[in-house]
Image 1 (cartoon, one colour):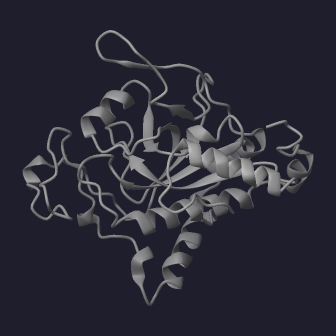
Image 2 (cartoon, rainbow, N blue to C red):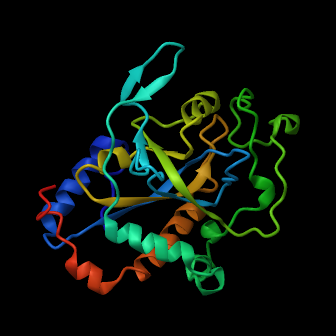
Length: 268
């Protein structure tokens, strides 16, 4: 397992860590990039705090499940057009992903794995799921009340109404993840970039890895990429991403793994 250096984020440090891992572990065949990210809620994709977003190529393979939103060109009207396509995740992981998606919920170990984090943390329940009332999504044009660490004084009239889920369990979403070098804290910019691209999540490392480290990206949703972001949901979101990643690895076939070329052999 590799981690970014303390206080370093973005595609550059991520690429450096991946290169070091490939050199240190010559038998390495693929990777999972697991952590937290900011969600993009829409009527079509009910992404909420504590959910998990997994990078998945679109049906036409126009992207590998990740796009680099700060690498491209501006076109007339202020729109952004990305240039270049990041690599697809390795076939062995896409195969395991297919198995996992077809597994009945009753047979999945995702929720038991996630519960084990909460049980392990009895003395300091930071990994416990936050109350549903703490999951607040505001209209894009409504900024956070300054100098407040929480949204306690943010007017509820500016919240976007969403039907309460029948249960408080985390959901897993599969689709496009946007990656860049800056923390996304602007809801209007978030929506402008996400519109028409099916983006479910923003994060800061994946674009630095996809073309040199065959991997799948798994992100627990801890905020909505707006000015209201805080760290309250980060531990639970990270645990949810880790639990799903563990369940994915459980579905990797040993036979397929033996037949997979190492990263060094792939010349990456």
